Image (cartoon, rainbow, N blue to C red; front, side, top):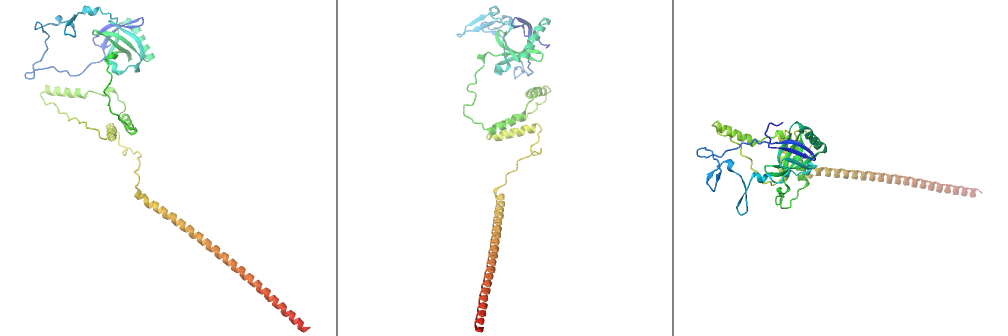
Length: 352
């Protein structure tokens, strides 16, 4: 149980189930607050409540409420008038619906409270509502009255407790008209990829690791002044300039985020990097050499073909010559045979 004073006592109305509860603040401010002083002598500046008709200071017990009409007329409103308002939620947090948590726009969320069970009899119904909310994975929408006005609330489970967020009424949230840029801007895929890389590099964080640096610096200033010392000088904040190259800014942001997380650059991690493309001038000689090689191959082939042709021609000529010689020899032999036969015939005739 939180050791803080309850700001509202009543009950949660859950159908016919009534759960006595106490409302306590779920948040607190640690900000340093200042007093107004007279700069010449350090005296406190105080506000006195003065009646403008009598021109005198009045006490708190003499002060009431009044509504100022459009013409400036003040209409007194007493606590008795307010007590008779038809307000069923004056002492009851009335649950009106259960909806998925993502149905509630964060813009509607206001102050946060814890709802504590009001005594031992409230333990059972309190636990029942808490476990029902857990199992359904929904939040309860409720109406309640606080500080003289009816409000909306959202009940959800936080640990073993039920928390309630005050919600603004729908007509209290402005539409974002005129907020977004009115010019047509195109974002390309490369820019989105770099933005995704930056988001991945920054990653997630535990909110408990975050702290108010301004508050700490302010405490140092107060401590130094109290000790009669000069306040510490803070470095001049970096001035945001106009982004001329969005891609370069994103790349620098990714690199800075990696360095802040202790990640080494790509070349130090031994990562495989794409080699730069060779220039055409370097590739040209290889291409020429290739052409020369091809030409040489073609020339060699031609020479080989030529040699083969010449050899074939020579072989053919030789064969032809040999054939001619054989034919001539046969012809000579035939002619010689005829001459010999003729001589023999002549010789026989003479003998006869």
